[in-house]
Image 1 (cartoon, each protein chain N blue to C red):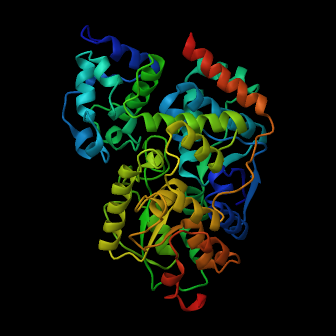
Image 2 (image 1 turned 90 degrees about the vertical axis):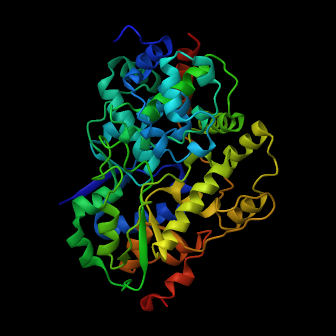
Image 3 (image 1 turned 120 degrees about the vertical axis):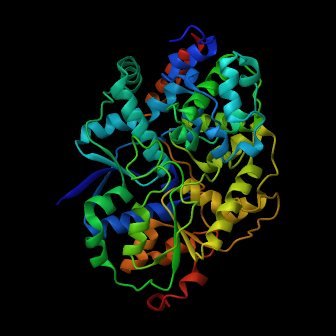
Length: 181
Length: 292
């Protein structure tokens, strides 16, 4: 590991084994990113700011939450950096360090999704949508779509559950214990 | 060759993408692929787990891998996201012993799955084989032009996915052509639909989805064929997000590859599968004599 490696780069290395310091700013990641039009920092700028140890700007950015994990950047990176994996690690670090999320609606969605699994062991759309509407406050979104989905029987009224929910709870407890230690 | 698999349906295939689950079962039965549903399977955690928590992203699929280990069979799935999460978790558990131990403690069983995680498209194209599939085709679908839409999770990362290329795969192309349709070439087959941003930033998803439709129309497609329930949901639901009204700009239907196989083979149940779509596929299917 070169001497110039920053604290946050080391943290990423520790979490996912990637070497973000190999980036030489060719900008291929940004050129191919389908979501870059909505980002506040371009993917190559995130990689550059990691080199400058600008953790606050990165961890409070919209970009880390808007990355859709399509992995186009990862397969195109000439230095073999899994940039989408780096984004995963940055989101996780951002949560651990209690940053205010740059995209509160996106984090509300992830929290809703995981809460549904924690409760049932399965993903049930009405439960997911219900929790998301409460957490996000977007109560009136997609009413028309919802009606159409019910008519097409795409939304099932009875949720499905895993029988061994104790195992699911143990998984979530272990995840939480790791985060808080 | 006996084809028997532990089957992981995945949450979508028993709810919003029920037509994918039903057509999968019908197609497997008639191709002689035996499916044994995995006992008490749980959600793979999808994007939300791997985007926010390294442990959950490995442990939720890890419990399914532990159950699959007991069956002694390979594990089959049809959802591109489940396939991706199970495959990634399987690789991680085998390379990281400390992680494996933590998962084993939480799950209460050994998650070191010894079989392979397979996607049905892989099994059909590479195990059943294209020449064999051609023998099963009964209905003439040659009047329909289709574009294959793989999305992201079937093809990336290249090291673990079955497809032959991360950006220009051909498996679905070969299958569609074997079923008798005309395959149109386009450069959007592995472009992202926006995935899990569907509820939270539907403005972004709308832009991506509309571009995919525009390019499909430009390529002369009557039909988009996919193997991913998230891709299909975003294409059908996110052309024009709104509050009280639901509107669509494009009428090009999107079907699962299993539905298309069922149509070509003349399997019972296709009216029910196709009736579940938010973009009505029946006008396009009027071009097929055998179905009218």
